[in-house]
Length: 264
Image 1: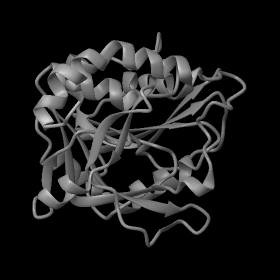
Image 2 (image 1 turned 30 degrees about the horizontal axis):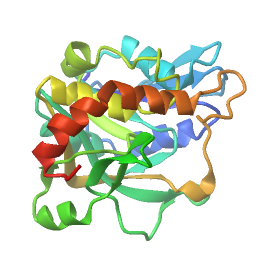
Image 3 (image 1 turned 180 degrees about the vertical axis):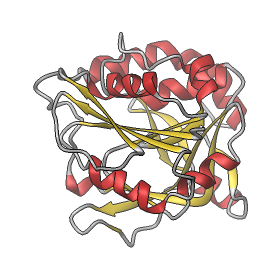
């Protein structure tokens, strides 16, 4: 039985290195893990491993569309999404699913990755983030030192925002609550974590941080691939930010900020 399906949406990225890191560090049985590499409008030779499956999209659908396509064929009890430029701690897959509750979306401690040397960088990790409206224009996560200090001895804690590059949730929660990542309004790229957070809160779920494991995400100095410069399927980020704000701002200000003790 497949326990975990990992979706890796990729647009000319380091998908094979990411998949290899998952394979090298997996502590699930060989029949319990599947990795679905979604090649979004391009092709490259995948890793030759029976746990690795390939979904080739002949035309780019953007990151949101690629994630949806991967989830649509996933068979695992749990779903994981990762960017195609990440490395993982030993046993990351096992640790993330063994404590995941039915109504949780879970991420882990985030370090930074030097993708040239494929090494975790000596930079402090990201733990809790505060969900804010940045510049009055868009939802964004920002470092939340007070929450980090409050939860410093708690290994699994609720959090308010996540970067969105790696998450795990029960497949049933995706089917029941997320449905799919909406393309209309948001566009094909941005605010996917924001959409999932608000849908989860509305349904009575939580977004959690598991500090018992970690992943390392490509440092910003190394640039992006799935971004606004995709000539096949450009993203309209400003319209997407506005749509997310128009959709969720009232709920955020009236219900979420008071819950977290944030002053408006």
